[in-house]
Length: 320
Image (cartoon, rainbow, N blue to C red; front, side, top):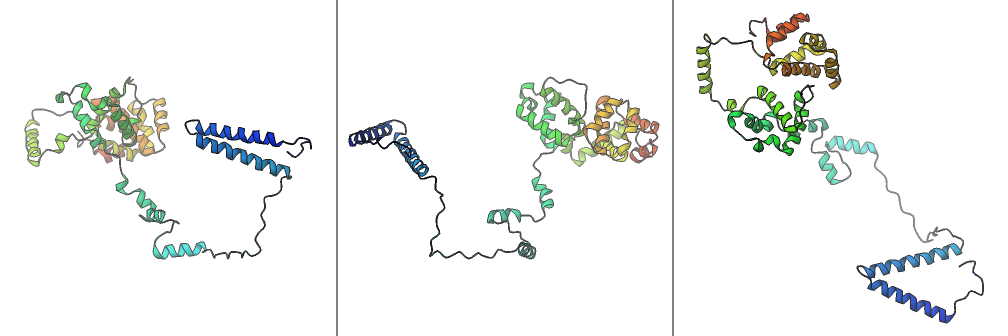
């Protein structure tokens, strides 16, 4: 120690005792499980570093700068390529160098970033028809599937269904007065709506002969069974929403929408087409079977939008 008194000197006997005690302590540490040998080395290394630190402090904390050897030759600085050269070479070869072989390979898989993002191979979400096909079939009473075996009761299916509906279906964001206590009951309500819009698997499997026979049967029944007003279809909704645009707010009061409901639809999206679609889908769900083309045509006429009504539904006789 730097400031110790001159008479504080360790005798030979004391030094021998300290050495024996130190060896005994290290021996006990090595015999201590589970990693005694490694721990003893760590303690010894720590104490040696402490001695070096004390010695450095006693010398007045000298700087650690090392002198350069006199015979050492300075390294020549290599010329760096200018950024313009790299860009010019990339344009000529149509291949961007990203600095490593793997990054360069990944980047140059598709030089056009927007084209790569819109590549159909990057579409990993299933369509509504594919995902809900089994659930819609099980919801049919004629299928006679017990509730415990329905896929809507699976938590995994429910989580995936909500994510898919949020990205593919306007029904997910529409306001409703129904209170659903469980996720399966909510999904069953959604399935009843999707079943009206999506083609059933049985319809897709019909042959041309079956379709022709069905048309003949329908033609025979037409005089005897009068048809009611045609319902509003999803195709009607898509075309009408595009025609309406920002004018959907003029139509909303004629479909019995209040101010709070209109404000809620405005807050759900900034796109006018999306707002118009949500208005029509919400009205269709609220009215159920009574959501017909005739009622929409009447509402458009009352709102002073006869031109839109004719463009979407014709003169009225074709729609009915």
